[in-house]
Amino acid sequence: MQTKTLKIGTRGSALALVQARETRDRLVKAHGLREEDIEIVVISTSGDRIQDRPLSEVGGKGLFTLEIEEQLADGRIDLAVHSSKDMPTFLPEGLHLSVFLEREDPRDAFIGRTVRTLAELPLGAVVGSASLRRQALILKSRPDLKVVNFRGNVETRLRKLADGEVDATFLAYAGLRRLGLGDAATALMDVATFPPAPGQGAITLETRIGDARIDALVAPLNHFATSTALACERAFLGTLDGSCRTPIAGLATISGSILKFHGMILLPDGTEAHEVTGEGDVADAAAIGQDAAARVRAKAGAHFFTDWL
Figure (cartoon, rainbow, N blue to C red):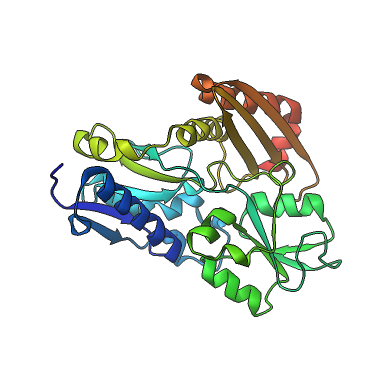
């Protein structure tokens, strides 16, 4: 299949570049292209530049996509590669998440400086995390710990940990594995008690709606089970109007034609949490997520969301 030079937009972190190169390599293999037919365009985002404040205070996780989506919308790039968990629920008009690559391990990795597990941390130990979900889950399990905001890319956070700025941190195991740093994890969290962010571990491609040329190029890269699971998880998130300002966890798994979902919503301080499960045919993935969100919202009650937001 012949094509003019294809431009892939991405953030500039080591992990983002690994994900962009994986996408490029899959396109090369799927269509018999040359590597030089595909250009990786690094785009600086506000989320990468603002490191001194929690994202919840400066505009949310959309800051990791804003500048990339502007270039996608006006045609300067042909597609964008993202970590699915970083994607806002609602996208700019004319853009959509068209493809999901096969998901990596969705678990969170615990990385202790002198201990191996969360349970082994001494009373009052300091844990660094920029994720409200992780902060809430940490405090739910260990309310005695001090949790501090901990921004930066994977390598930066590992360096800060090694330098003793915190006693432990959490990172997505998928990202560590993609960077060849899987051994940095001292423990892996059980998804039943420490569920991941919706979309964690999955790479997604964002494209322009109705761009037939790009649709044809990226379609072979889509992984059915991953895209189906993410349809459920993102529906759960969207129905709850979730963002980086709200601690929401959710994971869908597929066995044959059956999808099972487990979700959790928490107060930021971890003092209250509500869980929900759902199950059904994979064809009803989005509906399962929406129904789970409605049920957990009803279970939590109105007071929960007043405190939450």
